[in-house]
Length: 179
Ligand SMILES: [Zn+2]
Image 1: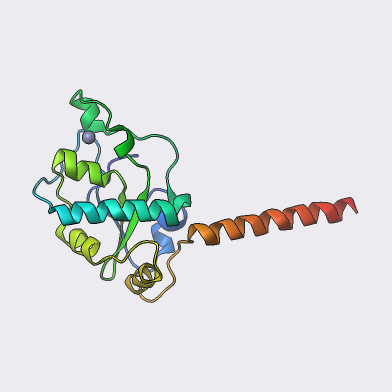
Image 2: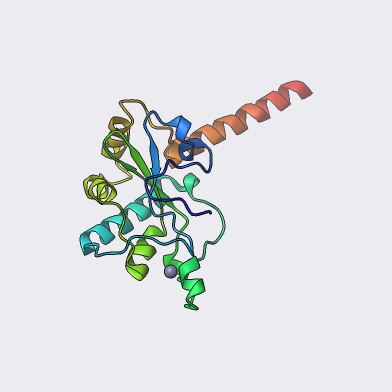
């Protein structure tokens, strides 16, 4: 994952990671990579625990949007520190803002805790306002942030259902061809 400057429009992947799938700007926060510099400062413990909670909730409700493979912290590696290990995650959180949606890597928790990273104020405020990522309120908040248009994100349940329906349709089509 390359470094993306804070509040730049995110361009990386497909689905909810694709800016054109949103009606409002999808802005990156916390996509840090050594040796790019970043803003440092104090983040309250309530913000840190909220971010941790959101990462965990997203892992449970939207696991299909987790990037595969391990990710090391390039700042720790450069400093010769041990790999942050299990606290590092590959979940990505989507945070509804005002006419904007933010996408942050789960590793933002580590950057804040271990490297005193200070995310942009507008993002921190949006994090504090964000409902539980497993809730309908969260879906609604994303929809409102997206100008009233359904966000391009499926819950893990919707994703599995669609996946199984497609698999069943493929099996039926194959059976029919045989018959
Ligand atoms: Zn680190």
